[in-house]
Amino acid sequence: DVKVTQSSRYLVKRTGEKVFLECVQDMDHENMFWYRQDPGLGLRLIYFSYDVKMKEKGDIPEGYSVSREKKERFSLILESASTNQTSMYLCASSFDRLTAYEQYFGPGTRLTVT
Amino acid sequence: GQQLNQSPQSMFIQEGEDVSMNCTSSSIFNTWLWYKQDPGEGPVLLIALYKAGELTSNGRLTAQFGITRKDSFLNISASIPSDVGIYFCAGQPGLDSGYALNFGKGTSLLVTP
Image (tube, rainbow over the protein chains, first blue to last red):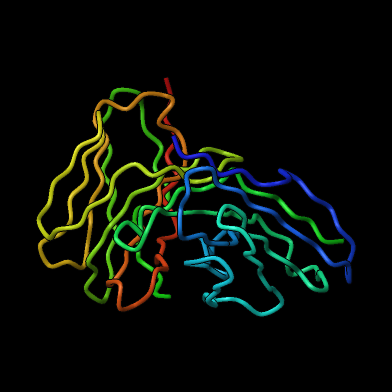
């Protein structure tokens, strides 16, 4: 079974803090994704990566950056957290280009920015 | 990305009943997927569809890729309490449009014993 893990299930940070969300997958997947999920808005893509050191902006990249130094790890960075970034953050991975859409999700990190 | 129209928004049914939900798009998709999300967890992939007209089953779940390529349906037969959760459809126009999925807003399913 594919295993996608996220570093924290719950996180509380203050406005202006730099926040790191970590995601690790153990199935040698090429593609990794970061989404945020908000009530009434569904899942929205922030960034994705299809290879080490490669990244692409999703629909809502403003206020976020990412890092992928190793194939199994994809980090989401909030440079200066704001209250409107309070959300559920979901990491996902998929095997390769041909199965790019069969994405496997981690359990999520519920981030609260106060 | 494009938001998909998913309906109904919520369903409240009795155990043993069959359930149907659907998802539509204003443009053609090459891939449709259905996910289920339990409270406090990430979505879990249920079924992936890659061909127009395709009908695929996974246990009591059956999903179809609409012939127009603009819609998809998910049916759950003989529902049980553990079917409770939010069901999301997701679609993708094709690899030329990148890797990102477009998601519906979800159908919340409640099942009473």
